[in-house]
Image (cartoon, rainbow, N blue to C red):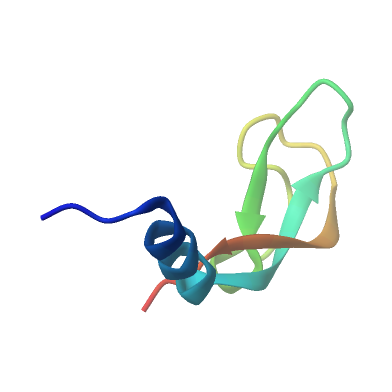
Length: 62
């Protein structure tokens, strides 16, 4: 089954949402975690530095 580009773009818009995430505050690290799955200490899962709350457009997880 083939979809045109417009149909694919509309489909992506339906599943993307503004989600709160904790993002690593260290400039050299790209670590982040969804607020719903964050650890209790709110440390970066990759480097252990502090994180800051921000909003990203991400796919919805059921």
